[in-house]
Image (cartoon, rainbow, N blue to C red; front, side, top):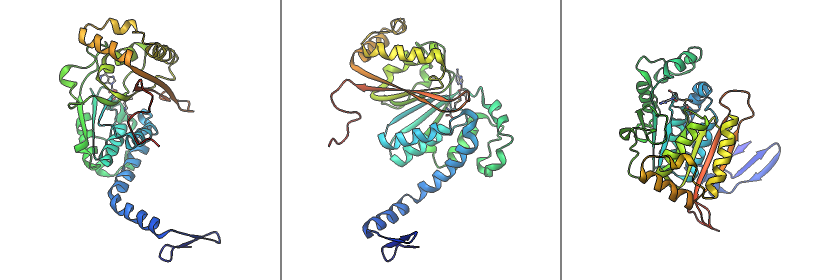
Length: 298
Ligand SMILES: C[S@@+](CC[C@H](N)C(=O)[O-])C[C@H]1O[C@@H](n2cnc3c(N)ncnc32)[C@H](O)[C@@H]1O
């Protein structure tokens, strides 16, 4: 029996008294966040149907929770895929009331991933139907409109280069005025690409930030390279790859970062026998005696 009005709830014969203020606060919360609940139901459906195509059905929820907790301002995703992680990140940003997600891709896998959806597309409502001839831009535009996320999400068509000096063309590399608080690199995870991503993006990251490299932790050579590099960085040793960077300013910034930050590496490994079953999480923090991001200490 559930009887909220008289402040008591009977569960399996036991009567539990409820504090009315808690009940009313909970009801008020449901009203205030009513839209968020509906938005999340829609996103759960997208996750369920499209998530398995690129293995992002659980990562998207992990990112959502982290973003809600830490309130990052500038979020960048390299490799949009079908937009599952981008939409979940944008939803978290929307609920936070601050921040923006930039997601980049050149659409090279788009047609192929649509083929994977042929069997499941009837599960989606017409406005979310992914079988579009318009390409990745149209797909993302329709999904972010249907989810009410257009203000919080920008898609940019861009091809990622294969060196650490110009991984992104300057016109693709504008992410607002600030530095990047959260980077999700989900387009390559071999050791060379990891070093290029770090050489290019470390100077663009906030003092306290996170870089996620999808697929890297269960690619053995990448796992070992990450372990080694993070250990070197924490000993303030500049990797040779960073010294090869052509731009003097970028090299200097890398030197500053290596000497002033603490790096933590966490391998998020799924207990699943599939190709996309891990994410390497590199946490960057000021070398400090207190936790970051700054928060109330108790
Ligand atoms: C694994 S999917 C991304 C999945 C997405 N991050 C998610 O969580 O749902 C990888 C994407 O990277 C894109 N991609 C791969 N190499 C690229 C490159 N060099 N430049 C631009 N996009 C690339 C592909 O088009 C593909 O959509």
